[in-house]
Length: 190
Image 1: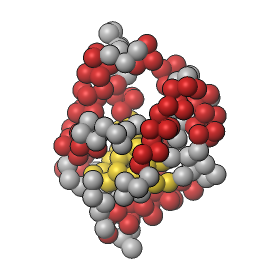
Image 2: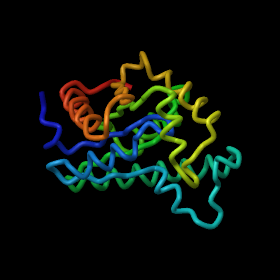
Image 3: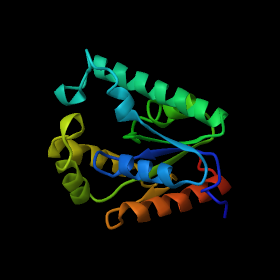
Image 4: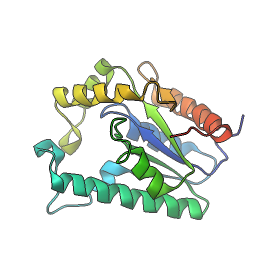
């Protein structure tokens, strides 16, 4: 199996709010043996200060446009890091029922070497983790449940899925290394 800790890769962590994507991504990036950047879509999206279109206030064309812009910005950054020998891990809540916007968009922005990985713990876990969030990142229980239900569409997609319901961050990051190693050896098709 390829040594994922040595490879320059672009990993996209997909999952619902509260899945642990950002926490795992930061932990994983901090501990790799090769330079690795963490690029959080939410962080980039929140660069917009005046005129920030918060989807919690209602999904509309402004929030959609800001998400598209953030994805393009993240993709550009990932390409730039990769071109300079630096791995990156991105995180986003990509929906399986919107492939052109989601994975297709990420693949266009980052490139064909993108390795998508789904992090999908059980609903009770994402509800608990989301309850501990604050600000723009905390969603209503109803919204979290709706998003989690849509994410179940990743089962059967062929993408690697990590159910981190009973794993701590370190164990989840180790599982991510294993998934990335397998994906380098045999890239998923999407």
